[in-house]
Image (cartoon, rainbow, N blue to C red; front, side):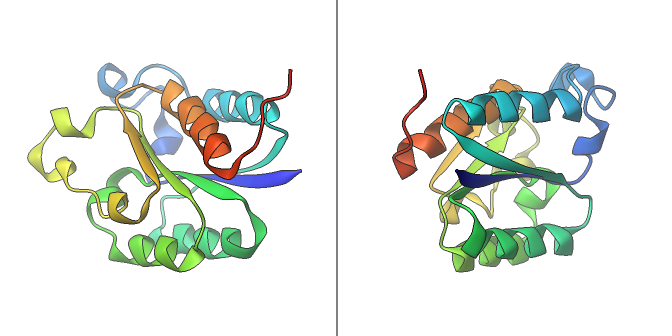
Length: 149
């Protein structure tokens, strides 16, 4: 079985309680269940992680490099600030799908700049937590994993 990493950045541990009008009412455990169910359709194992610390996210991307088929990444606030995460993605040489729960382009101007997008294979935003399922499905298509019937 191929492994994919689903990496979540700062404040995503507060899903369900933090600004539910923007991020919805689902919590991170529900996101994980959705990711695992979607990944199972493609026979993927999932490493699901969340951190509020930029360096830890960089470490996980580097770990994924030789050990995974791809990464689904919601870098959250680090999307708009982290050259280190950008560089880790470029070095990992894996397909990365950037995902955001909200539509970052319909929000504050500082959220419209992504340091992740230039090194990601694709970016999804505005689909709520369903964006994770779409990202995993897209990642499967990119790496040629067929859905199990």
